[in-house]
Amino acid sequence: MSISLHLVSDLDGTWIPSEGNLGSLRGLEALLVANPGIVLTFATGRSLSSALSAIAASVNVLPQHFVTDVGTAIYHRMEDGGWAEDPEYATWVESRWDTHLLDETIEGWLPLGVRRQPDVFAPRRLALEVESDQDVHRAAEALRTILKERGMVVDVLATGRCLDVLPMGVDKGAAAAFLQTHLPLPRPMVACGDSENDIALFQVADHSILMADSPLDLKFPGMPQERILRASGLGPLGILQVLLSLTTERVEIR
Image 1 (cartoon, helix red, strand yellow):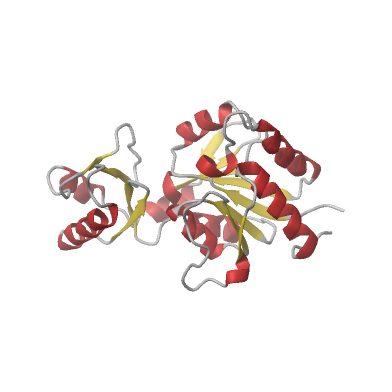
Image 2: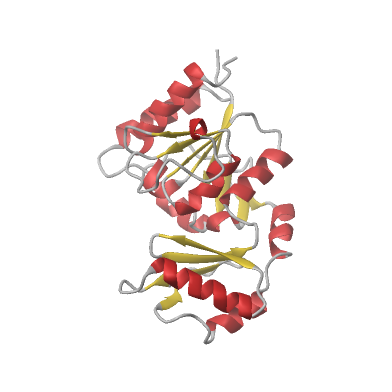
């Protein structure tokens, strides 16, 4: 008997364990090795280089695919171990992105207390941060108003103290759905995450695992409650526990 599914997981606060808790990750990785029908995708707000650096110290089982920069890029693992960006997805995202207007916005149109995140320069995403004395959601709303007035058709996503300006309709969920549609990937899709930028991922998944220490509520608009489960264990342990429960009770095992 083997498990067949598409496992899509956030990295920070989700797949990467806290210091000293590598045992739980090794258990989760053992499940993947024993079940080659599980296709692993990491979906992160990090760039590809940043994500690879983040997993280098602890992760032994690499994903087949990377969704990076909050869903604005997809990379596939090649036979030689390298990574190749998906050109069709990149073209679609670029068609929804106006770099000139964003550069102009950065020059002097950001709301008070909002600044560019240092060292984050993605080609199809604008990564911003909000000063600690400012309300993040008010800053996000002010930014949306400014961008709309400038004629920009974009999304603004607030996660923690960060704001991401993304092409309209582009996020982790859109990238995961693209993978599922364009590649021969198994069903069901099981998504794992802990923050606001994972909600779009949950919306396209068949089952979702919300991390035990996530501040998010289980109730998301328009999503059936039974599709979202909160992990009881932290990090990889929680993923492993819920995944075993799903494969035993809900997911077809062949």
